[in-house]
Amino acid sequence: MSKRKVRVKVTREETWYPTYMVPEHMTADEAHEYIINEAPDQVFDEYLHKDTLDTDTSIEILEDK
Image 1: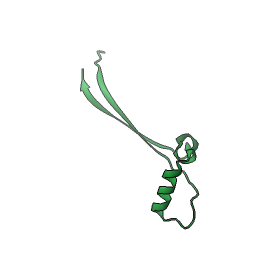
Image 2: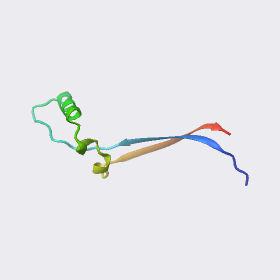
Image 3: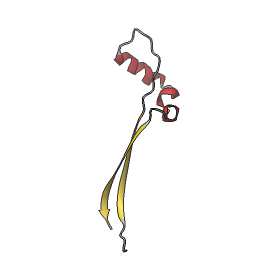
Image 4: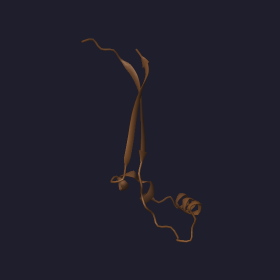
C-alpha cells in the first residue's frame, strides 16, 4: 500500500463546569467580574474539574504533499 503525507490542523476545545461561591446579593454580571478579578485556581484549573471536563477535538486537512 502506498502512502502520502498530509498536513493536518488539530483543534481542541475544552469546557468545564466549576462552582464557586460569590456573595448572595451579586447579579450574574457582578459575579462574573468578581470571579475574573479574583482569578481563583479552583475555577480556572481544568484538572481540578476533570470530572466535568468536556473536550471536543476536530481535524482539518490543510494541504496535500
